[in-house]
Image (tube, rainbow over all chains, first blue to last red; front, top):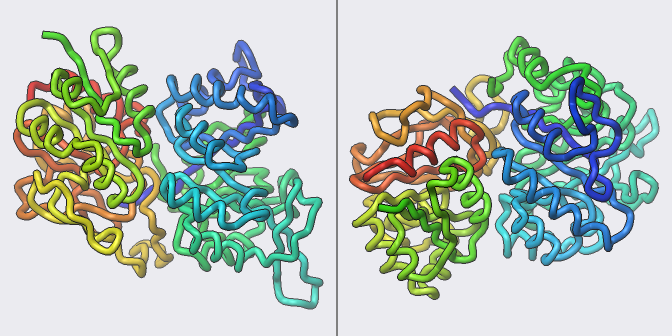
Length: 257
Length: 215
């Protein structure tokens, strides 16, 4: 009897619509966040993460409507990331029904924002999202730095030290994405995941690179992650969440079935 | 008799999630209100005390809004459900924030998880907060457990847990890694450390049971 490791599907939302083609068979509207959220909930998703990729700030208010609609139908934890820059942004999302917000660029620009947000809203709803990229040469020991703007802008900040700092500032959870692996389907950067997970006291969500079910199990067993986040392997109907959980269970991982 | 349920609003956290889940679980027959108005709270047939965040802030807001007496009265007179920090607040004292006096409606204290715990199975460090889906082992029969299987998983997120004085209050235990009281019950009071509003079918069943419970 113990705590289950979590599987978290991630949905990209642009102007209120789910993009990057979720392809469930027999779904009526492939872009409807409520319907997709409901499907994942039925399959046994442990949480859902919505990433707002809306370009313009004015259109962001539609994200709150999306969260509100989903939260009235789906009763599992909801995290919203993308464009969370101020305390009013956080309050707005929590009020709409989000349970957690993921803060990324705003934390890099102003680490005090994380401290302020955790103080005001509680650490349990503050997820710090870290986009990390390997920067060592082959002959050097492994080292990762934080990048912003989808991996384009280096910051010179060490990823492991940054994770520690964000936990000190009140982050309740870390969403860790390997920018080297994101989109490759080659599996998580296990070394990165383990380095960060072992360095901090709070749960780690591993992200970036999942291409098959074994990758999910590796992230937990070898990477010491507490949760795994994936998009494409679920969206394109290759695997259901339940299949993923059965596979993890076969590997000896505690899951909620 | 109507079926009005008041969720005590003291500005802390997940009130809207709790309201949505109660509305969903109760359907049209149930009238859910979110309020810090003492009269409205005491007019309701049932009362829910939710809560997330730091206990000191929660207690400060409860006191500032003059809600402590209302909570005491509701907890004596009608079906009353405490959730997460709303459960912890019912006890006498919490270790959190350097020590915080609580409402003292139930005997016992609130303690922090140790930061150096390991998972007995894998040997890896157990993370704090205790976050995610863990099993709830029912140790008494209770109307709120109706239709919920033994050891069903519910969603937790917390760094502190209650230690009731004596075993008689404990309605369920959960292991992290040692067993702690994840639900307590006494007379018309039921309180849970986990979040029914985020625990899918099992959580909605518990809320539906609460909305039918006479205390």
